[in-house]
Length: 446
Image (cartoon, rainbow, N blue to C red):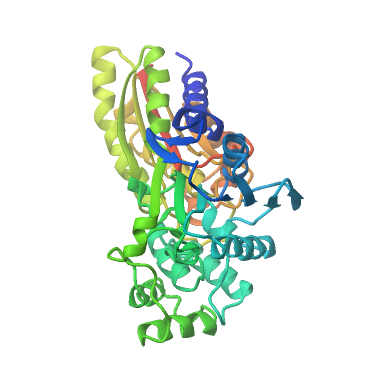
């Protein structure tokens, strides 16, 4: 059985299932003066104008798919994720930065706030959100510069902060995150159409919840800096804003009991589980029994590898005994605490850690062919041009023959370089969508 061919087909089906064009076609439609989202109807005959903000890695494709449905009502829009800056047909397009915000992100954030502030009670602000939206729309709190925001974001990423920790800080040094864009749009209505890139589809964490409530607080944001050991490293302006917030001198983010939330509706049209179901269907069409383990894995990549390989070891005996192939599917977003100076991302680091664990347990895997894949659905694994990597007996043997030491590469956070030498990098290019990462574990009789 060609496990690599199966993995390619499974990944292709998963990405197609969460493509912005397909999701808009399946979940959003127009019937006369009715806009229908996930079966819910919004009357447009008595509405004012529609303004559009589309941000994140799927921002351009989401907007392009939706605009034809609302073109007669659309008065203005902001779209991020474009190749370059452009003003066209009432829409301003921005090439915003990721994972760190840039000057274009700042300009996009300023324009988004302007659109929200002119909303009337009858107007609708359509907010199309996808992964990367936090960096694409950036408007730091008063007293915090763009450079300060870049520094603290970069430090938190390198420290292995998870999405909730990262957002707790970002929301509290922002003028639009943590529900503040919804507050700016009052008394207008806000409709969120979302492709989720966070575990459990937590609306407050997707793009830092610009139009949703936030459960984190100023004290929690300070605690994140303390727990990650960054209190003395972040810019003074960031600490000052958070400390002023704790002292009650800065306004908190929007909270769950605020009545303004009645003005916000949210629809998640695509997520990691949707991609996994499509991958599972493809695997089953190829004759393999498959199981989805989780769509919300988290934690340090190398530790997660140990846990997953334990499951593989438990399955190996069944594969040999029954002479049947099996597939385990999973998704989520792991983290990496960067201590070395190598090149890589969370997916290549996870696969390299899996290789080490598989080598430790060679005897238990005798008689089995195997393949492990981990890829970012946005096509970019950390600061690299790869989406992730795969490992099998093939490139594991090649690495051994070349004298490559997997542990040395892992300790230097240099997983990209390892697979660049041994083979196994997955190069998809940017996909224009983002539902976290996908992981495939295939075992077959050897």
